[in-house]
Every structure is written in C-alpha cells, then in structure tokens.
Image 1: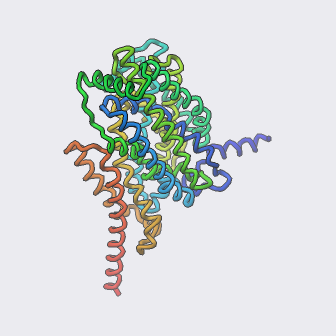
Image 2: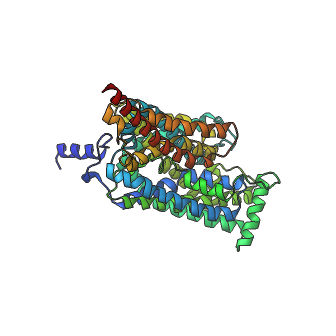
Length: 470
C-alpha cells in the first residue's frame, strides 16, 4: 500500500458523515452493533445501578420480572421507533433535527444534550477511577460524597478521562472496535461476579436468597424495610433509563451505519446481558459485601474487589470505559452540530474534558438513578418530533423538514411542543417530588401530538393570511 493510499484509508476510518447520509461503503452488519451494545450496557453504570435496587428496598420478585418486561420494551423501542428512521434517513440526530426544528433551536437542544451526556460519561469515568485507585491503596470517596477526597483521586480521574477521550476521538470505528474486543470477556466476569456472590451468600434455594436479600435491605436501611420502587417503577426504569437513546432518537447517530433496521434487535444484547444479568449480579455483589464486610457502601471498585479480587478491578475499569466512550462520542457530535465550523475530533476532546471535570465530583455517579431519569425527561421528547414528522407530517398536510424547507432558524411549533411537557414534568419532579420515570412517556407523547397540532395550526393560519392578501 502506498503512502497516499494509506492516508486515504486513514481518512476513511475517521470520516463520520456528520452532515451527509452514510454511504453504502460505510454501512455495517448487525455483528458490529451486538458487540457495541453488549459492551456499552454491560458496563460501568451496571456497577452503580444494580446495588441501588437493594438500597431502594426493591423485592427480588420485582427485580427479576420488572427488568424482564422493561428491557423488552426498551428493545422494541430501538427496533421499531429508532432503527427504521435511522436506516432510511441515515443522518445524525442533530442534522436530522436541524431540518425540522431549525439551526438555532437545535443549538439549544445540542447544548443540553451534549452537557447531559458529558455528565453521564463523567459518572462512568468516576466508576473506573474507583477501581484504578485500589492497587495504590487509595481511599475512595464515600457513597454520599459530593467532592473528591484527595488529590490522588483527582489525578486518577484525569488520567482515565484522557485515555477514554482519546479512544472516542478516533470516531465510531474506534468506539465499536474497543467495545467488540472488551465485551465478551467482560460479560463473563459480570456473570462470574454474580455466581461468586451467590456462593459467598451461601444460599441454595430461592427462599434462602429472598431471606438473605431482605436481611441485606434491613442492614442497608438501618433496621427498616422500606421500598421506593415497586414493580411498575422497575419496569419504567428499565424501559426509560436509555430513553434519550431510543425514543429520544439519539441512536439515529449510531444506527445510520446499519445496513438494515433489523440491527435494532442487537440492543437486546445490551439489555439482557447488561441491564438484566449484570444489574442483578451487581446487586448480589452488594449483598455479599454486606455479609462479608458489614459495609453497604456501593462504591464499584472496592465492591468488585471484595467479591472477585483483581478481576473485579479490571472489569470495573474497562466497564466504565465502554460506557463513557460512546457517550463522549455522542456528546462530541452534539457540540459539533452547535459549531459547524469545528472538527468532530476537537469537539469530542472538548466533551471528554467536560466529562473528566464532572468525574472529579463523585455525586454525579452516586446519584445516577435520579440523573438518568431527569435527562431522559428533558431529551427524549424531542425524539417524538422526529417520529411524528417522519411518519405523520405528510398524512396531515404538514411540510416535512419544515425548517429546512422554509429557511427557519427556530421552528416555534417544535419549540413550544418541547418546552410545554418538559416544563410541566420538571415542576412535578422538583416541586412535588414525583418520580422522574412517570413522566418520560407522557412527555414524549405530548410533545409529538403538540408538534403536529401546532404545525397544523401554523399551516392553517398561513393559508388564511394568504387568502386575505389575495
């Protein structure tokens, strides 16, 4: 291969088609997506979310059956809501939305999207850092910590953040390749963690497991058994913890590379390996830690080390990476869409820097349940605009890609359709203390209906004004 040919080849590896449809030569089969989703979702968040079910007092029955149903609904959302549009339009979320909402409005959305993704990635960098510090005998921040507890912890966070940002900076190919390499053995370690935890718990029946699970909840809650999540809450959590990605259409940016919409089924690898098996395994790890050390502190690194030793440390580190990599990649695309003259690489590195700064503050990781519900409530409703515009605009006499067709910087139909349900939801969440998971689906549906209603009203008003002018 000549030098010039090598340069062309390398340029193709990092070509991301940010403002053009993905061509056939860059499209990928389902195999690439199975590995990516299994790696991304059998990852750092699982070490945080699984134990939080125990701390919330959720029964084993509700965990096993609630996660089974909720994850199935999430897979259906990717397969039948997101993937069909992605494989037909083959555009990033941001460029697709720009055609409907207008450049200026999308900049606001991209800022919110990018920043929230950075915070999520930052939480995963924190997760990895809690494991990296163990060989150096560093004390990790406590579960209720807001600020870092040492300069050494900050240095570890920065080092991990630099590596993760560098991988994400090489683009989708690097992210996908890293996930496909890491996910097979990491899934086995998660499974091993669950099996070892069961052995350490010393149970040999379902009744025995339920009994020790209840004892663990009593210990973690200081002598009480109170649950803040029932069956419905577990279902909604499993369905909508990635709402911004599936019904929110963020993964248009991923599935635009898929040859067929059926690649959407690949998300089942992430949901049932990560959001089912790994969540349950991580929850059992905390129960085992409570029995072994009388500690209910679910800090991922020490918890994994207490159960499976050095293999747990390696798994936590890599697990954090496989979530943070694609999340930083998505955030970089969001920032680039805000600033079209910039390169994707520079914006990805900017996203990585913001994520690393966020990772210094462990509260983002330790408050993960509430955070992912909040960002789904804010971001997911905009996906309803894309869904409604793609499937219903022509049928209702509304111009698809209205902002592009009319040269609008802000499509007010989109603006108010997004703001009204989100503001109402945030009022009930913060002022009334209602759980975030109740609002994702109503806000999504309301946004889509309001967008079509406002668009029809706008079209009718324009027609009346034109008749008066005539």
